[in-house]
Length: 114
Length: 109
Image (tube, rainbow over all chains, first blue to last red; front, side):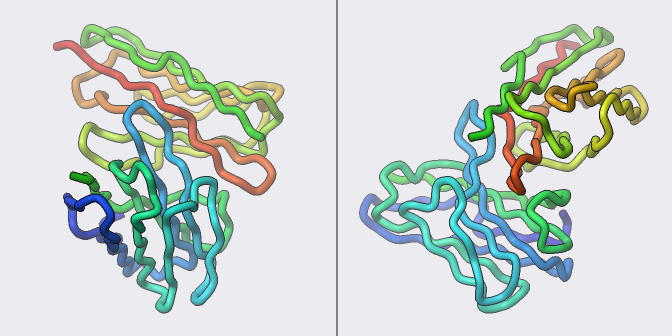
């Protein structure tokens, strides 16, 4: 997981603003994922991408958008349409395209909406 | 959809005591993964179980997959303060990966 960077570590956003969370990896892994973690809950999948220029919605995609223009990068935009965006956001990768493979997680970004 | 229950939600133990967390599914699973998340950190992969009745050990940690492949357990022998954190199971079902809600372990020195 040392090869996955997420920035910033903490992010504050005013209500009604869009904000983009960065995720970069140098592991040469094919697939990348975005999860949301709320206190006392497990990880919930927002979006995932198995190859460049392609991505799929996860279980809670509403209010979020992503892009995968490069293999190394998978930014997540939290839009103003997301009603409760305050959470811990985790980016993950898998070596291949299989969703069932071992997940390698980045350090995460904590988003707080003011 | 897939229901993954992890119990207990919280566990406080004295250092040196044993600890067990259980992961239960409503359906037969392809495999199960276990992750550990330290306080303030991110999940880190521990192990994957695939076979029915499989038992794997990592030092003081013992992982078991049920015979029916519907449940799993993680047992820590003689806990240490370095064991603190939240332990998650992640189950594979219908080509999806579902994470449990986790068990938060506190170890009292």
